[in-house]
Amino acid sequence: MSPPALRIGFVGSGFIAKFHLRAFQSVRHAQITGIYSPTPANREALAAAADAAELGPCTTHASLEALLGAPDVDAIWLLAPNDRRLEVMRALHGAVKSGRSKVRAVACEKPLGRTLGEAREVLALAEDAGLAHGYLENQVFSTAVERGKEIVWRRAAPLAGRPYLARAAEEHSGPHEPWFWQGARQGGGVMSDMMCHSVEVGRFLLTEPGAPRDSLIVKAVQGSVAHLKWTQDRYAKSLARDFKGVEMARFPVEDFARATVTLEDAAGQELIVEASTSWSYVGPGLRIDLALLGPEYAMEFSSLNPGLKVFLSRAIAGGQGEDLVEKQNAEQGLMPIVEDEAAIYGYIGEDRHMVEAFRHGRTPIETFADGVEVTRIIMALYKSAETGGLVRLPDPSLETYVPAPARAPMEA
Image 1 (cartoon, one colour):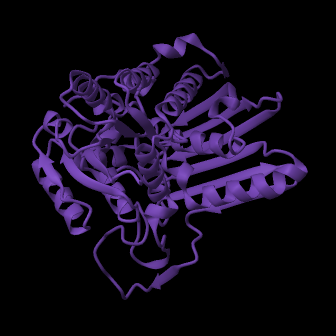
Image 2 (tube, helix red, strand yellow):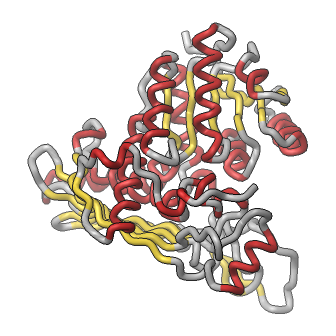
Image 3 (cartoon, one colour):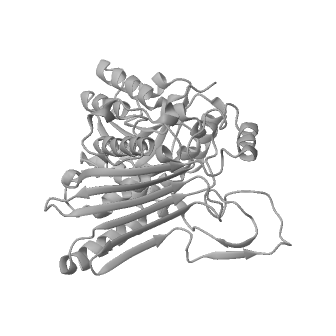
């Protein structure tokens, strides 16, 4: 007999929660039955959208404890800001251990923690409570990544040898919410926010299908950061005007980051993930560029090279929006259209995968253990950027390391 639909409670009602709600419209055997966020208007609007999409009935909850104790919630999608992840996991752990909650699974958005210590505690809490857990790294589940990896490893690698270089880049013009710009709340700048995508999708592409994730060992990292745009006086002032509490002049966070991650497979072959991320790219919108290279082949993908485009002349003037591509920067000219962002960016695939894993009692291909490893890599990259040198792993100092932009206290 097929297991029943998974009844899901959202913690958080911001940008990423809305993306997941769009994705769940293409996921079978799942209901969004509860939402908690501290902002009543936001949680009411998201619940109404869930009901309108026939994903409910969805109940709003005025407290986290009420959501966790709801009888119609089997799993939690942890979509709250970074500085609230550990707090939510501690509450979930306590509620499950005491019998006040029947939740049996939890999926958490990236990053798992702002520091390695936080990420390790999130994993430990989930395991101690006996919760199934999944790490929501959407790019791993991108339709292009899944299809490209399958073809390369099936057709090319057996004849020419395994792939040895993965390249990943993600950039846009900057986040929409103030907490992303606050190092202490977010955990850093663009390295923390977006490099987690790039290093993990690179690690995934280089991992042989069916092999455990720890079959690749991270040996060393080299990282660098820069403050290219948003610390300039005019742009720092615009952020301060638009976002209360964001002071880039006093508390700067990086808007560009670069990484080289050296790994080794079971046969001792050296592999490389080369990645860059930025909040200082002004183009049509969010750009994701991926590549996987091997001895006699290459796979490439760019999110801004879709099959669908539209041209709008200067005579067509309209309001600003993001109806063509995420982080859209223009409404005129030749514009690429990402036809189904929830699918192309991987949100549908990851939500479908997590739902089916939790329903059938299978271990997801991305768990909190992967979230811990990604956080360890990010901490090593921040340390490399701060010291200007290569960081070899394992490095015990990373257990207590806090990235430089996250050390400065932020004003409320």
